[in-house]
Image 1 (cartoon, rainbow, N blue to C red):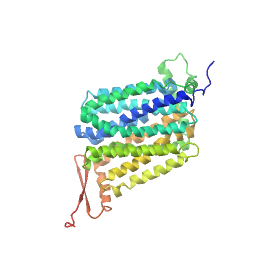
Image 2: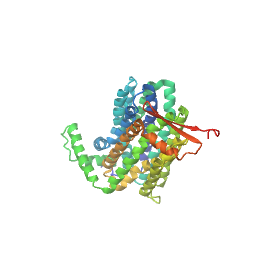
Image 3: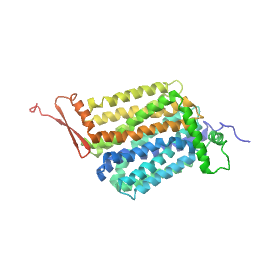
Image 4: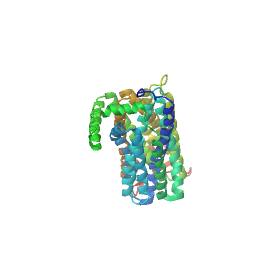
Length: 429
């Protein structure tokens, strides 16, 4: 006699598996948020075009989201556990292959494309897997998962600088490859529960057992596309996806270009680590505050999302007003980190509320696709703006709002924007 469909939801086994999933999230987010620091190091090491070099991190982060609809098909066929294992293998291979190369074009393929696909297979299933294993504690466990992403961000900066100083950039690739292999180990613990197995059977019951694996995948991909088109008729979901695209544009641009911006301002490695640490701590706090409010008796997730994104938009729009401050990068890191962290923690609970748990994998895959568009376009667009010197006009605008004893000097040379602030002596005034 088969067990009831929900006999292992919210039970002790689910909590043990949750610890494994949380460990996977920390491993994955630690390596994922090293991309911004890798950008600053690679630009100085190989002297390639900033826009071209930024494509490594942009593709790595964007494919994580753009592959969402494809990954959702594999989740429906093979389970979350299998997808997470495959993702760990691809991530490890991408950094291991980079160990043998010293070419930006190769890095774009290995870390950018192969690593990005690995990120997609590793990052999307944990949220779906947690949703399958919990019902009463679903919102809290999903939101707290996003808090651990902030912990990974906090670890990434000092760990990568230590690896590069000790083993060099190629040596760091080899060690990061080993870290990603831990994702495979953790994923083996995440055995599908009865609810996930029943949903897989229900979604594949119309597939002929005699069909080849390739045909099975094609048929399920066709079903997923049809379901995605149906979900696109949900106006609330469409607006939510467009909103997610917008703030992911800002988040990816800040996380990848903020270290480089600090270098152009004349700050050393210690300051770069500090500003990324501030960004990660602020992001973690934002996720934690949002996670603490979800659930019964808390603030409505939609209202909280709107409020946090409103403050985020003002903090970026008003950057020309405080961009001339010596520590403006730290101000931007605090504001963008905190108010981008909250919406991250609210993604899955809002999605479940809009479409239900039965359509979770397809809906979440569609949502991550829109996120990927923002992640992919953010860093190159900002790099292109800096390349054209458009950023200098923003800083010139901010000059009128700096103290009278401050002069802003802007020098655009060798495709880099260098901004310095010089105090004038009283005698010169």
